[in-house]
Image 1 (cartoon, rainbow, N blue to C red):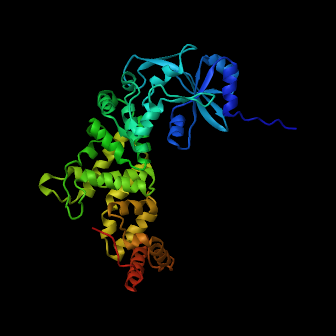
Image 2: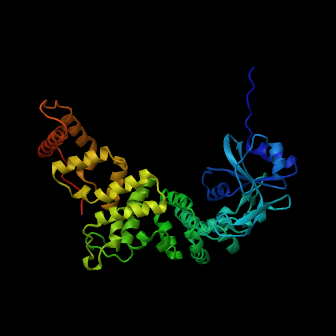
Image 3: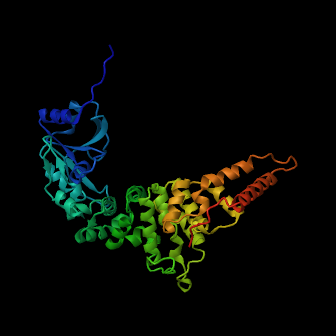
Length: 426
């Protein structure tokens, strides 16, 4: 009979640690989620009273993941989890790598928790289900407050400034004033942080229900102009009030970004919503409140933004399509141009659903008929394209012939009263 590997559950893990003379804890985000009444996704563990060599002897299948300090990957309860050793840290240089860590049997859970970013993440739960909360994390959850656990430790990793803003967006919490001040003091070291670490916080913020909280927190802390200068440039850029009663281009962008996120757009589409009007930040003052040509100016800014944030290629392509087409989508009327938009979306880098969400977010919930009935329009084009090609045509002539035929088919479809005339627009 073949041997079957028995999975170790959390209770068994804690028991083995205790029998070896140590203590195991569930720590960080999983405990925060439990206190908030949310399902815990990633479960991270903390070990006290034990050395790494003793741990690997106890769990020989554990794989070391941390380079600067001992963190192991171990399957617990059917999932691969991080198991870290309680440690204290001392700042020795700049940035997130500019400190040295020490672990030992004498380091307590409270000493480990104090070096963490915010109080809501500085809680642990022991093997008997008791919450260890020395820094008031549960109370801050109740008050919906983001608060630095320790002013001294917060600045050791400047990306914690972005992380606090991201937590505000994720949970709908407010950042208390002293922590906003600490975030602002991270500015100098934050400039030198790897773009990949910054992007990780941005991506999580854009996946939240209200990404605007991320950018508003950075604005309140004085970091927005440094970290997202093109978004900061939208502040004070007036718009025609008949189309934008919400105020300037920054307020409009925040509303559209939140609306796209709330409607379930992908993170790359929410990013595209964030950038859809980014060209308005460079509108000449004497043109205001109008922003003629902001699409072209936005496209010109995109390479610089993409390079600074190190965004994935698909994010850049998605933003490019939205910047270029978001206005035209609701204004275009001719069958030929509608045909081109349908085909561009069919072959593009953003899904029909995501583009529809962004256009609706930008137009108070309204979308054009061609987008609302996209499948019908596309079926007309495909039917027209399936007809035989005249043998006399060669090369580019074939493409022009198909385009013309598809446009004519759409024209007939629209003229026959098959379209809904309630077209959204501005």
